[in-house]
Image (cartoon, rainbow, N blue to C red; front, side, top):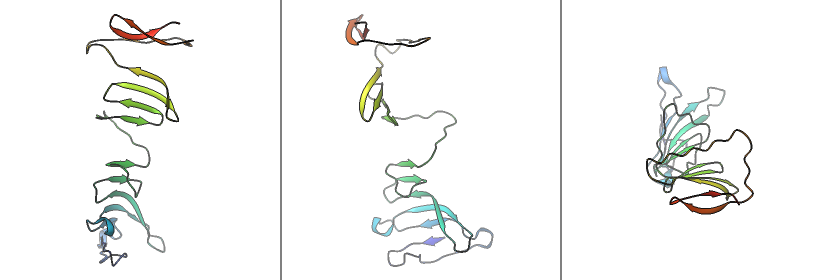
Amino acid sequence: MQLLHEHYPEGVTKASIEAISYTGLQLGFPAPAWGGKLTIGSWSLDQEPVFNELLRVNHDGNVGIGTDKPLAKLHVNGGVQVEESAHIKGSVYINDWHIYEQDGELRFSKNGTYWFAIQASGQPNTQARFQTNGALQWEGVKHGLFNRFYGLTEQ
């Protein structure tokens, strides 16, 4: 274990337990200037021991996995696997795909310019299905009013 202090960047004390020597826990003081972090990682046992940080909790509550500069409450640099379901409240951004919780809209974009959107509408029990067995092409799209729902019409 290593305790950090602003005047002792190498740590105040180092402790090795025989069975668990070179564990990877570092505690920092709660002020941002002093690091204010909790890090978990592993030490290399090569010639010169080097700490390999795996997880960090910053003074502001941001958690980083695979990054030492988390930009959000959970910032993962690497793949994430979810076995069951993930419940997300708010917007979801996946590369150039955007899902907005507020209006139930799925938008496809490239470099920030939207080029296709699917929006949920209707009553809670409304069911709709779109299916194609080949290529689908529209020459033009305009909004039309049909049975109180907006939809696509052929031009």
